Image (cartoon, rainbow, N blue to C red; front, side, top):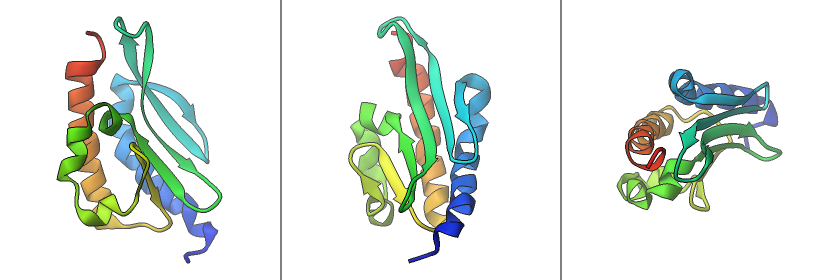
Length: 123
């Protein structure tokens, strides 16, 4: 198992996936262990909706992506390798930097963002 000291590097890579969406969303938390984004206010739900976050945990770094929970069809297209990192319906856990999977996760995040902004927020 990679040493926990690698987790900040993993976290920074996952945070880079989310940073491009920060200007259009609300940064709820940004520190050395958590980067958390909420979507805009939803008339339908009467609150800001959680979009995504990255968290350093005890045994791994978690990447939560709410659009895959809201739109489960997004997960049907992911590779078996990325699927192995999935825990629950919207969480991906990593212990080390995995460039190919992070690239796939970035593409999934982009699709999720586009769908989130188009369909789920203000209706």
